[in-house]
Structures are given as C-alpha cells and as structure tokens.
Amino acid sequence: MSRPTVAVAGASGLIGAAVTEAFVEMGWHVYALSRRRPEVMESEHITHVPVDLMDSTSMAVAMSDLPEVTHVVYTAVFERADLVSGWSDSEQMHTNLAMLANVVSGLEQHGRLEHVTLMQGTKAYGVHLHAIPVPARERHPRDEHANFYWLQEDYLREFAARTGVAWTILRPVHVVGPAFGVAYSTPPVIGAFAAICRNTERPFGFPGGSHQTPKQVADVRLVARATTWAALDERAWGEHFNVTNGEVFTWRDIWPFLADCLDVPCQEIEPLSMADFLPAHWQDWADVTLKHRLRPHTIEEIVGKSHMYADYTFGYGQPGTPPPALVSTVKIKQAGFTETMDTEQTFRDAITALRKRNVLPTYGPQ
Image (cartoon, rainbow, N blue to C red; front, side, top):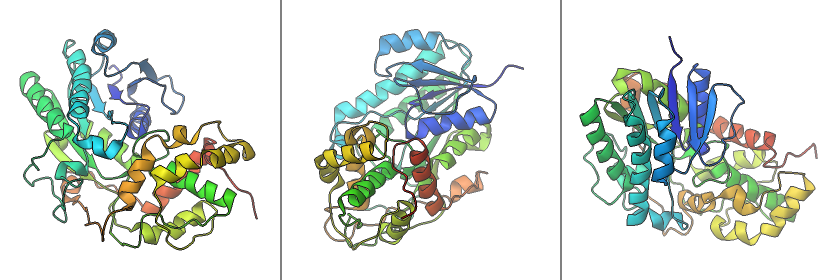
C-alpha cells in the first residue's frame, strides 16, 4: 500500500508548518507548497515545492508534477499591507480565490484528489464588522458581507459537486503558535515588546486598554490535529467546524502570566499601538538581537503584519469595551474531535519554541 499524501498550501505559515508536521507524524508524505522552505522537522517524508500560489502558470506546471496527491490542506492567505482594512478589499478577496483555484484545479487533472480542508475564521460571522451572537454557531445563516471566505467556499462546493471530492472547512479562532514574520501570530509581537521593554527599562503593561473582553484562542497544534482528523473521518466531510482550545480568557488576566514567561515585570495597563511602537523601536530591537546573539532579523521580519493584528485582538483604540466574539465548539466535539488545550500552556510553548529557534532572547538567573 502506498504512503498517503497531502499537499499543504501555505506550508511556511503559522498553520501550514504545524499541519506539515502533524501529517508527517501520522506517516503521510507531505508536499509543502510555499515560496520559502517551512521551518519544520527534518524528514524524508517532506518535499518542499517552492511555488508562488498567485502565479497560475508556474502553479499549473508544479501541480502537474504531483500525481500522488490525494488530500489538500489549504492554509495560505494573501493580505494587503494594511491588514485589517484590507479585509474588505475586493482585490484581496479575488486574489485569495485565485490562489485556491490554482492549487485545486491543478491537482484535478490527475483524478486522485479525495479531500480538501479549507481554513476560515470568525470573520465568517462578521466579527470584524459588527457584534456577533454569543456563542456563534456553524448552523447560523451565512453572514452576508463581502469576504474571500465565501468566494473560496462557493468555488470549493462547486468543485466538489462536479468531481465528488470531499471537503471540510475549519474555523479556528485566533491561532497561537511559534511562527514569526507572518500576519496573525501574536507570540513574537508580545515577545519582542517584552524584550524591548526589558532592554530599555520601560513598563511592560497590557497595551490594549482597561476592558475585560473574554477571548478564545486555538493552539496551532490543535488546529493541525483537527486537519488530520478531518481528512480521515467522514463525519467531518461537507461540514464547517469552529476550533478553539476549549476555554476563555482575557488579555488583562493572562498578561501577568505572559510577563512571567518572558522574564519581565508586569506593569499597569498602558494603551499603546504595537503597529506604531515596534517599528519605531527598530534600533532597540537591533540592540536586543546583538546583545543576545539572536537571528539577525529586523523587527519587521519578526512581526510581519502581526503587530497590526495584535492591535486588533488587544482592542487597542476601540471605544468602550469591544463586544465578545465567542464561538461554540459543540459541533466538532459531537462529530468526534474532542481535544482541548490549556491556553497558558499554549502561549508558554510558543514562547519557548521561539527562544529555541533563537528568535526571542532567553535570560539567565537574575
């Protein structure tokens, strides 16, 4: 029997790298589709396919060379430079649709594709536009607003109806893992902020504000294991599933824990834009990298667009208390995926991994 195969689109990203490792641990061969090689375990069962998902011509050639692929996990996303405002941009939406089509249609010619897993998120419920029901459930009617999720989903539904390929859509909330230089990873933002605060003796206070809005996150390893489950369990096929760690927290309450993880004193709340503060303190970050012999990355290379997302999820600059955006995970548990994670451990593990990769500084005893 041949080894099962999966193509992971966006394999160098936050979710894609974790998905790559999860499938290898399951004994699959992974074709990692990404422009840069993902930072994952060394394995003969990973083949990096260096491609630009937006280049339809090169994608058609690359996909024609992958005849063994039976499954796709699509984790790639194109974002505008200003991130949050780009979520309503028509060009951003159609670019994301074209990227998915380049992968799926390129593999269709071989006739071996069996299942596609696609990522969405709470923007499916319109969380970036208005208050949403608490909890938001997958069975709620589609929130009719312009969103590349709907373009991709409608394309995938049509493709599945025509070819018989099964599909699953996962909706993880704020995903936490050790990726850096991407759009939605808060640990490197928090870690770089803490390192600069420590190096310059400025206070490390929660930068979002005084509100106490409950939040949820999803450990990237949990999301990755959900993709392996979805690929094999027919109860997942043709369905949407919210994915979270299984608990709630507030940024204000978890901030002292994060300060402890990062070896910096926790101070009083200090509203501050990470999107403004971190680029402005590029020299302080350069000093940190030199002092602790970190990888010689600029602050922009560390945070990607995640400092913009941090402002959004911290609630910086939002008037009053942001409404809660909590989702139900009853459906996925009833379908058979029952894993949960401790949110504090999720952040601790991500910080530890970034330190092991020499991205964030490790401090000795004081």
